Image 1 (spheres, rainbow over the protein chains, first blue to last red):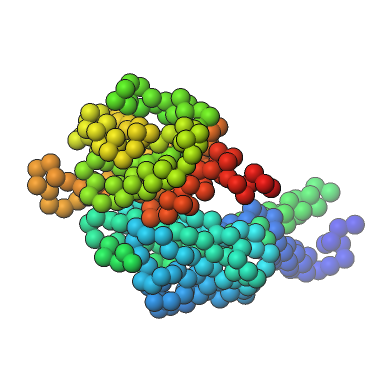
Image 2 (image 1 turned 60 degrees about the vertical axis):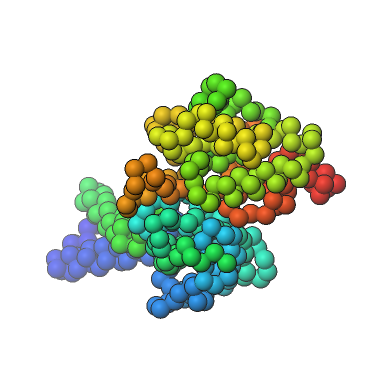
Length: 162
Length: 203
């Protein structure tokens, strides 16, 4: 027995369209589970400045806070990096430092668990002899097997070598 | 039956397209550098060809710099020298320091030899062609570039990374120590790889 045998012809077509919409919605909804985990980028709240304080991003899954001490951020001297987060099931935290306008090499210290929701470590950025340059510090958090990335831009100043 | 199969295929395709669309529309993560792999290399030293594999069984401290470097390189090499001074004679004999010049244009092997000897006898300076240096630097995630700007003849400077790379006795790149690290911490890192760290021995 076919669909058309007991439904008016237009009803069968409507049913097919509804079914396609339903499975389309299902595919959309299941996509994060079916496809490989991808980086999710978190946008820090506007106006943050690592030279003055922590940078924070809020998501539906939790909060991420990146801070560097001392302030302003020194160049060519080790500094302390702290990431505080309320994200669930955090397995690892790294902070990637990259030159925004110039390749500055690989620089990604791994932080260690330092307390409930707190990860800390040490980093450094090299001096650029041509003057201040734009850096991107990206907090990379593995939360439940999914990597979340919070990039923050800041300028380095070679005169800041406390 | 044929019609039912066609319908099922259409529904599956719709689900797949929706899933793919969501994946494609998801904001891309930031572009990140690939982690360095490290690994063996072969360059020239003042006493002949040198391969990293020649130092198997030793902890290797690998530093990229140049002899005209105004402040960062001497500071880093001074820290390395202080760390070596803090090791026992046995430990020191199992450490090799390599100084790879990123300035093949000006750093001759003779100049490199005199420069390295100023800091510590264990420091073996290495040079090579620009291509050879670039290949090694890439493997260890090191950047360097001649700084743009006014240059007076031969007096240019080079921007470069300042990590000291730690290679374990089996040749694996295991750590990158930041510029400005205390000699005491560098000693701990070396001893950890030598297996002579007191804390590790007792555990």
